[in-house]
Image 1 (spheres, rainbow, N blue to C red):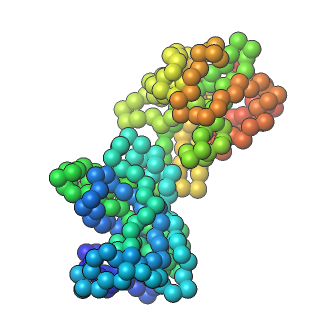
Image 2 (tube, helix red, strand yellow):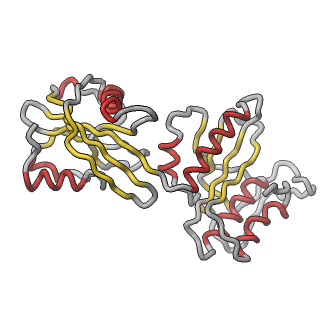
Image 3 (cartoon, rainbow, N blue to C red):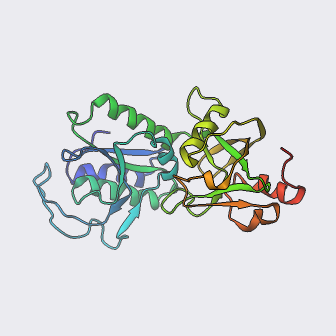
Length: 288
């Protein structure tokens, strides 16, 4: 839909939803001439703050958009799936203020209508795009396409993880930092397998990036599939040898621990890692 920049345009999506229209996902695109990056809006806010008139010459400088409705409604899009999809693109960021103009008005009305519909989990997101002189249209289209896939298609990630031990046969566990997806939870070090990359090559690269050490994975210990609420993960766990704890310098985790078999369940593991860890706790650590 091409929406007019006025109250009618801001109401069109929400009115369609309220009269029974069903969407797989809704992605609003707006123009942000002063921005040098793509902005993904976290919230729609129930407020007007129009610094200039819209295309119908309407200018509301303050006040609520919908009386009696929530002050703020968060995006219903899968934020952490999007984060993982765009982690290789620097010129994109989450924004906490969609402004007080028609973009925010449209976003808020849409989020409110979805929340009150029979399909409240429908992903809704607003993207603010910069001038084509700042970022080529081809690049913007690529990012929009990537985000669209996150909203419409259940993602599947191939992940390589490392079993790293010390001389006392304790395993290395790493904690995700505040602000990260699954913050405060523990995991095996590792990360996503890139396109045209083997799981072995991926774990070598990831461990070098995350821990600042070089490893030589010898064999794959296990491969499991886990379904999260909004994505599926295939986990490839490699044995990566003995490491001296003092050489480990974490760059992406806020804490690391070396855990014996008896200590394995003292930390809160990521759901995908739990079956592996529980098996080791009961049956013993794998013979390497």
